[in-house]
Image (tube, rainbow, N blue to C red; front, side, top):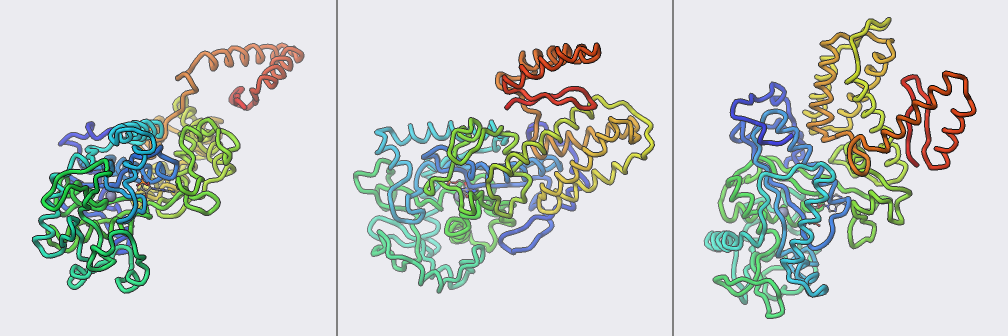
Amino acid sequence: MDSSKMTAETPLSPHADGLHIGNSLTREKERFVPINAPYVGMYVCGPTVYSNVHLGNVRTFLTFDVVYRYLLHLGYKVRYVRNITDVGHLTGDTDDGEDKIGKKARLENLEPMEVVQRYTNDFHDVMRVFHILPPSIEPTATGHIVEQIGMISDIIDNGFAYESNGSVYFDVRKFADDHDYGALSGRRIDELQNQTRALEGQNEKRDPLDFALWKKADSSHLMQWPSPWSEGFPGWHLECSVMSTKYLGKTFDIHGGGMDLKFPHHECEIAQNIGAHGGDRPVRYWLHGNMLTVNGRKMSKSEGNGFTPEELITGNHKLLEKGYSPMTVRFFMLQGHYAGTLDFSNPALQAAEKGLERLMSAWGTLNTLQPVEGPEACPDLDALKNRAYAAMNDDFNTPVLIAVLYDAVKAINSMASGRMSVTAEGIALLQALFADFAHDILGLEPEMPEGGGHDRTDGLMEVLCAVRAEAKANKDWATADLIRDRLVELGVQIKDGKDGTSWTFD
Ligand code: AMP
Ligand code: ZN
């Protein structure tokens, strides 16, 4: 599925009316009313490209992938902007420390843009592996230095920022006189005052609460640009204000990111937008994806509990009992609602693996199903579809949607065994349910074995199973057992079921 399939004639689904979004700004579930339907503008904070993406990052981008997919499915014409942070994000995550990319470049003796390219490539590879759709625009911070300087000038002109020793800081107290600084994160300015540590550059600030819009660079700084104030670089929060408003307008529909970005990053973005452009609510709906944790702790590079997708797939990490496929991980993550934390564990991944197998296998069965008359009546399949929409309309509730799909799986299996009736129309409805909700919206696809497709291994296994079935039919138990035992020795488990023989690899 991609947005290019949507044409001007694609009508908005009648279900679009029912979509409700958990808005972190108002802390309410609100009906989604775009500013200029059927167009929707959505901005999501992208990665800082100084290291390999870990699975926690994947969760956040997956959350917004499903939001994007569902909006497209409803017929909205979405402009989805997800940036690449390639300058300005400092190791202290505030105004102190070294630039994360500059530091990596210094340590590895690389050009900063080499670091950026390497990890941007990695990020794109990972997104592809997990079926996360590319955004409509993927702007970079370094590509928007001119616009960032322009926005700083506007904020200074409006009286919300000041220059100090070649750097420019946002005047938080001045802003807070007339605006609700802290509205998004729920932090109160007095509490913040007490928590603020004495940091580098603090003596340049009028108040420790102020944050940098532009920082003067010393000569050791690898990335720097000329500006009216100094040779320097932009503050981290600024790029997102600049790039979201440049591509989506001064007021736009949805802004997303991980929960950990609410403060200071998003709070500062709001202040900058209002400081530059006026208004009072530059973003209508704020969405925050919750964290992926390991044993209750946020997965992160610095904690040492953040494994890369490659480690996950190969199983080559101390936290992993075995490797898991990208679709299993995608399914595992979708089994939790995005607003709640999700704890990584091997048993949970193994349960997801089985659950996904059940879903995929029923989906396969569905495509071979013929209309049947059974003793049990077919359930109301329209109701199933309506429940699927109701789940997604309730703040993108993917776990409830998955429960609806499992109900469809139960029905399909009963139909296949002849216990339940189904008409040709019913089969078509189920097929549409899987195509829309499992494939297009949840982004689940049958996985190909290594090497791709229904490969030679599958073919060989089918031949072996056919020979074994023939042997059993001839009551040649010795041959049948010999095949099974030799396969077990090779790490292949075979299982005889009513629909034939299936196999799994250890
Ligand atoms: P970064 O590259 O650190 O700026 O992070 C990129 C995105 O991943 C941000 O939206 C973060 O909020 C998000 N993120 C980082 N760690 C996690 C985690 N453990 N779980 C979910 N999202 C995360
Ligand atoms: Zn951002």
